[in-house]
Image (cartoon, rainbow, N blue to C red; front, side, top):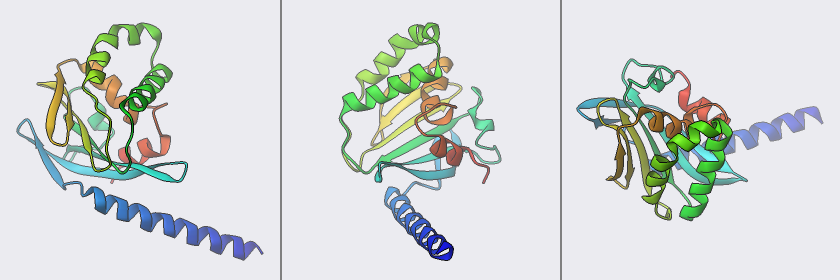
Length: 186
């Protein structure tokens, strides 16, 4: 009986890995991107699944030779790209962002960042399957939000960039497993 359970678990795990690999192929993240004259390499990618539904694929880009965790420093360029498999209403995206930010930060920090976060959220549109969003940070220009290759928002505020990228990359974020995979040393 014990062997049967182990075999079933292995089959399920391998099936999930194959499905995840197909989703990453669908997302088709570029092996490298250029941001402000700096080449960033694809470090890690993964699929966020919620209640057995693939929501999006996420990819983290950093400078070559720099570990993903080292790229979290405010003086390092980075790109977090999300490719969506599902339609999501903009109000649900904003709500999830605020729930996560409130879990990660004290009220004083959030009040200071609120005008910039609200300005960023004003640029959100409802997501359609196939949309590609990216948060890009460079020390020279700060945080940019892109949707399908178009820059929608830019602010040169390292605190905003750290807090917003932290939704995915900081402790107590949207998903511990997503964060761990994106920040793993390759």
